[in-house]
Picture 1 (cartoon, each protein chain N blue to C red):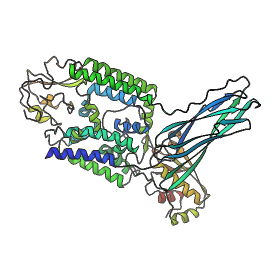
Picture 2 (tube, rainbow over the protein chains, first blue to last red):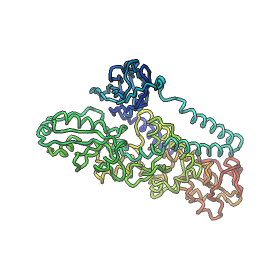
Picture 3 (cartoon, rainbow over the protein chains, first blue to last red):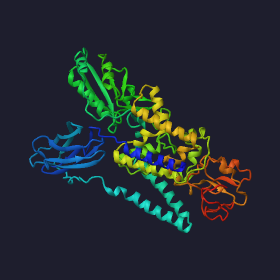
Length: 333
Length: 251
């Protein structure tokens, strides 16, 4: 009987792990342009790759990138697009810059305009962003290659899979032929190869980065909210009574599950009164600003965190956020 | 914070933690789709060195289990594979939901993150907090009723290290000529094993309680490769001892 109960408890825990779902979140796509400075001759071409990373659990739709710049510089195709980018997925888009024959040598600024949409429940948002590219037109420059738009290679799993096969062979030798030495050799190689290659890829820094940012909903300090925030009538009235200019800094991490709600809440509030302005700061990019504003607790950067630009109390998390923000703004009940 | 991965169940969100929890990191890497070279290399190194010896000697949550180890009942063999179910479930949940689901249930996080952050004013008494307290309470009750309950049946970190128990350098060895099969070692084993027959079991946490209890000196903790299946004291692999009692039986 006792064995059955323990077995049942094990199964229930496993079912719970799978059953507790975390729904959508995260409005931010990250774009990385490579290269950011392009050199090409008049009449020449050069490829640009734009890596797109969806660090959220929302699905981004209708991602389109087009270039706007001086006459004589165009792209082919005119627009690179991606219909859907699923949560936590990467992809790449490519554009080829084309310089007209008669374009005078010089340095030109080209803006890559990014447009995409995402939805939180029934509320959908369109994001417009700009990625700057510097184009240097030189008479003697050589045309570049066409951009590669291949996604992450599935072959990146080739080495681990090969290691697993070799490991299974070694385990087989151990089980069926009582030979342990091959297993030790393979495991030793896994240690050396894994640590060596992992460090070369700077995965230890990735690990440190993950552990040094505390997302309040990620370890169950609070619950991530995925609905679009709505302001109460009392909140709107209180915001309209704001008598001083206030600038809020919203600290977030791209993968933080609570952050989009905090960001949207601040946006909604700022839409009510022009006295309230805001900025979003990615703590992974600007840890020093987070430290200066008291967002780092016990050497961990806690997100989401909202603070007035002149300092003072920090509002962590999204629990009862509307009321706490009003208090932060000095118009609370 | 350091880059160091510590092979014990602990919450990297803990205000006092300076190392990274392998299970938390593993979930994040699954979510990111990262090929986990650094994590795998580190865990295999730890596993090769001591296997589940980390559970017996270093794990902070194992220490709590030890404090509440009042009833050293016999391990339930089938249920002990529950920890592998939890490990696989943790990976699948991270992949399927793109979220650190295990962390939201982890009793170590309950103690090391939820409660401290409540007193620091960052956490509040809300549903996630109560879920944490629920899993903690259930685990504590389990620990009181069954010694090392979490380590035996549910710990995903223990599941990973258990894979290396039969090849780890730190291992329990049996001098069969000295063993009288008295069963004293089984009475003190916090994991509910019979060390004189299950000395290389995947559940052994190599705590050394049995080596201290054995007045005949038949059991030893050794730090050497387990090559050849027979050490200098003449220990033998399970299943080759003609006098060995059947699994689940008493000595």
